[in-house]
Length: 178
Image 1 (tube, rainbow, N blue to C red):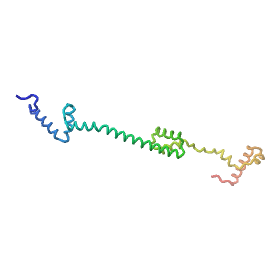
Image 2 (image 1 turned 120 degrees about the horizontal axis):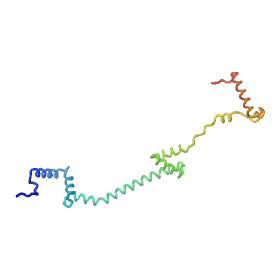
Image 3 (image 1 turned 180 degrees about the horizontal axis):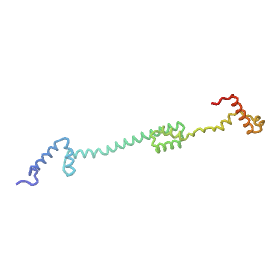
């Protein structure tokens, strides 16, 4: 009498057993197959998977420690770069308040460079040179002395006399208009 749990009961069972055997011998599929068996039946001893899991378990604290050291090192490098950039800005005459404003600008405007942000900050603080008004520049450049104004009878009378003189010069052709 045949065993009902045997894999050799039917042709399909034989094919399945052959497929399992082929997959267990193929280097590309063996690890996945063994991991699947271990996941299905964790108590099944599979030395390849068990050894790998033990090694990974033993190495995990070391791997975590190396990652922490790398993160700490990266953090130190970033902080050193920031301090160097701050020192450079300080050397250029920026105050602590200015540097804080520059770094705030870097965050708000997503500017990665302290130098670029400092240029932007300096430009925003610079006032435009006032344009002189034409009236002010004319009055400042005319040769007026107090005696002439007094003799003419005041500033308005003097200005009227100067305007009449200028018109006469234009009429006589002494002044060329462009």
